[in-house]
Image (cartoon, rainbow, N blue to C red; front, top):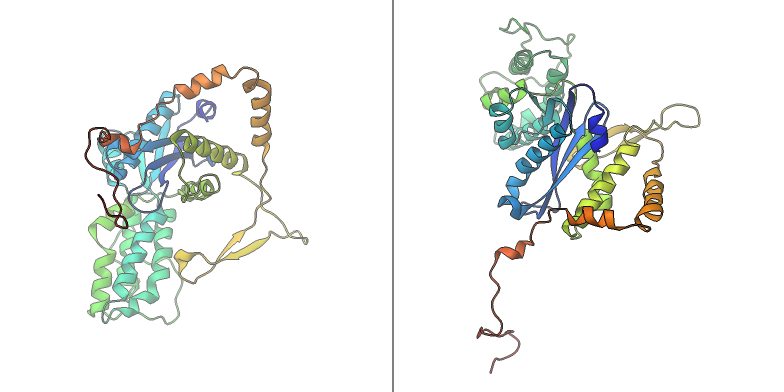
Length: 356
């Protein structure tokens, strides 16, 4: 991965995100992935243990900083970075690195917005807004992909408050008229009703408008999310691993992903692209269509086996020295004082046995 980073001649667009090693908010490990979104290759993985930074929520920022420092020290020029809306990363790039363009992944923004629409639809007299949920999410993606500037994206987004009321001309120089053709009758929201007022307030929330202005117009982090799903094959979340063991499994997953990231699409016997239907959980019963890809290859396994038997077995010392140079953090229990069993008066106790 380091050699790949050195051979990039131009400023690249990176995508970054962290994966926790276990569900919930008290993960032991956090692995931060940096991917070159232009060629869909993993360029760096940083593994952080929670006691290195004091708490699990701090691992993502630390992983991001380590990865960015490593890649730039290797000679990689970073032009833009696409991440989720992590506040600490936003602040760092805004204040410390204004030379790097920071974009938000559209899926992460749409995910949070969809949850708010669902919550609004459960309120009394607001159920009709749920009929607009899918259209609103599609409109968010369109605003990001069709706009040349953040201001244009915001004006297009704000037009949705008029559109849902069947008003398609807007008070905006950047986007004066809706771009769609004439529409058939829809379940338009009635002006001045509770549903319409609450819906419009949600759409023009100032924090949401700031996020819309920073939506990535081209690259997204869906490939990073796909890589994190692949890691489950190498490091399941229901199995505990040592620090070195987890790091090795992450590197194996990266080797597998980089070899198969740009596979061609599979075709049926008639020569047409093969398509399959999926019902993702997050779509709540709605389906999605995906092109099938050709079977993955495992050439990296042959290379690793050849390296192992031709070099490592013959002279393992250099490789062992590299492993010994890894900075392995202490176990989580190292922060606690252990009792002296010889001097302590405390003895093992069970509620099923009576102490003498």
